[in-house]
Image 1: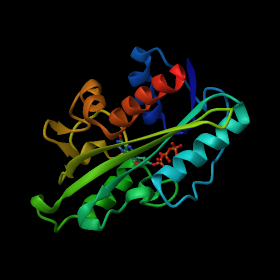
Image 2: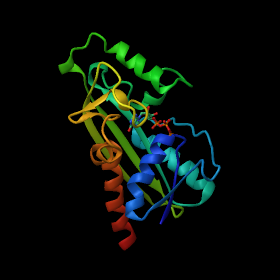
Image 3: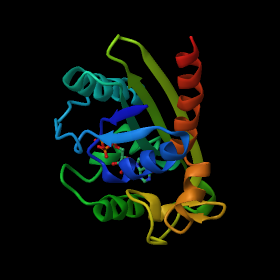
Length: 196
Ligand code: ITT
């Protein structure tokens, strides 16, 4: 099966490809098929935004299309940046600028209060109007400095019990990450959907 991934985030595309390839799902990103549409993410939940992205691109390409809306929720910041993780340091800011802002907001927060979690909300829209949704969460802590070279986004400061998301291997990240969990749940639902 081939799925279009409605995203402009190359880090997400790499993870979708990594997780889906062994399951026999071929992934093409919306950029691969030259559908670089700026989708208005004006929903009020991760799930609503995932659906807006998947549905918009599905209507343009008429192929099964999956989207991820995700974010980092920091307890000491009342869940921020949350749904606004991509825009936390303003439009066009770099990952480093977002991380610097986060570390600066948390500079006086002691280790035990630096708990956080990532959320990935997945929605797949089919041309016949059907939908499959899934969600994954990964709990951790925000470190006090960047560690490691792998991954994307907030990975260098998201600490798991094995090290930061940027220090652990791609396979280890997929095993425990919000996106890994959400995509495996999605795959189980997809199998059931295809059987019916
Ligand atoms: P698309 O909407 O085009 O998919 P985006 O980057 O704007 O790309 P989101 O609106 O879902 O995606 O924003 C999620 C942000 O949360 C993302 O830009 C990262 O900064 C962060 N994020 C999500 N998952 C992450 C992960 O696994 N590791 C590090 N940061 C992550």
